[in-house]
Length: 437
Image (cartoon, rainbow, N blue to C red):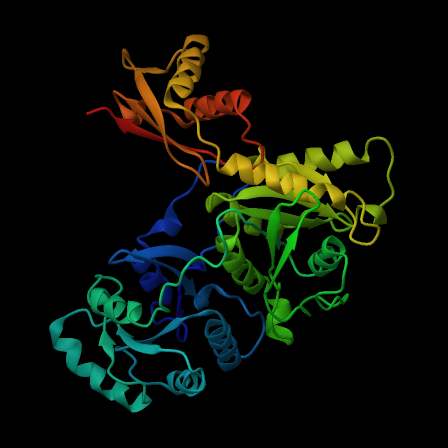
């Protein structure tokens, strides 16, 4: 089940990004030391009172050269489209403005829960400044201070009461759920039709014609059950939706959450774009199985080196996806599409792979014998033992004497040894270092 989504809406300079960072616990400032992972500040996971959710900062959505009020309106519409709960952020310092009233008018019609928050209430004396905001007609305003972290607890307490009730899992655990992720017009809808062998969705050469996500169940020739989650790259037609690439990322993220395996679709004619790396980066960080699907392979001129050159480029641009298999296909000619069910199944099995502790520790000991652990100021990192604590993705805890001595390069070395020994094709694996008590 996809996590609930909170969107923060408001005019510029009311502190949306500050509140966003407070709610997500400054996660957006963490930089992973992996080449090629592109960060996008507008979307991040968060947790409050044991409830996990995602947060959208609409201030990060660049509409372009639209007029000031038009930009705010379009950002609000994007939030309404995606969010379960909307936080409408205003500022106590400027009071109620025309722009605030314009946003309120849009939110009235949203049929979504809207919480009115008044930011920059930095001390108790300023609380009297919030009463003017009742005029917006959105109920009781919540006084908050992004710079000091004041009042956010009450705001989040109210927000989580509006989350949809958690339902049962949509599909049985034996069913493999996969999605096709990619920029608009890389051919996702054509691929869906080609894989299923029938016209299930509208296909058009205009980016953004798919209206909504579509789940389609099917059984492979080997009797394995699949659910294909077609991500609807862009739901609505219109300039904002077709020109705002970040919006298509938002549409993809919910599908990623629901998937076991993500097919990152590239357009062979256009090559790799920055947006491709952003979407793939989210799938990697979510710990999903990943397959890189190069579509429209029939449309380019080839020689004996074309595939190798394309693969080298992918491995360079997607350095953090070295584990992901690459398959070159054509929705038009159905080239290699018959290989997909078996490949998706294999990656899904690798996601669920469990390694016995005794076998795991033999591999770790052999790895240390081949390449001794690092030292620092005369002290050596000692690895006592390791154990697997989770699957989807496979996650291992390594118990050591000094966790801070586990340099990322040595952790990468251990990960590579695990990959050399076990079949982890298509899945990220996680190594967590802990001090032995």
